[in-house]
Image 1 (cartoon, rainbow, N blue to C red):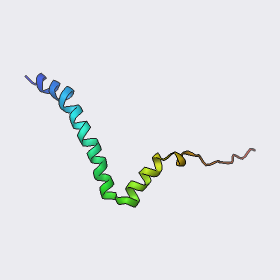
Image 2 (image 1 turned 180 degrees about the vertical axis):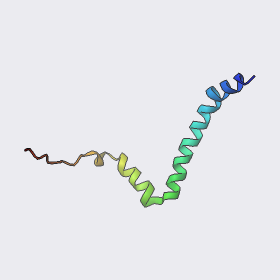
Image 3 (image 1 turned 90 degrees about the vertical axis):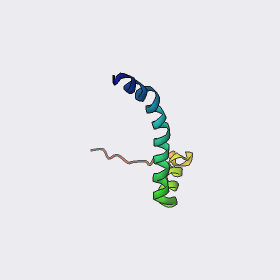
Image 4 (image 1 turned 135 degrees about the vertical axis):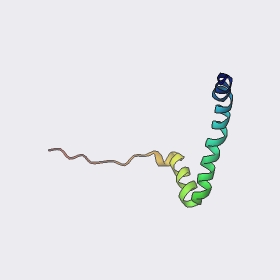
Length: 61
């Protein structure tokens, strides 16, 4: 009796809800955080200039 509902949710509603809720939640989070705390760090994280790594000096004993 419940198998059609499980199949409907698993194969139809599940992907649709994920497609809508995950980006919507991220946009709401960025809206709450604002420009300086939310949007600018996201842009900085995905910009190619911020991909360089800091060098760490390792001491030898």
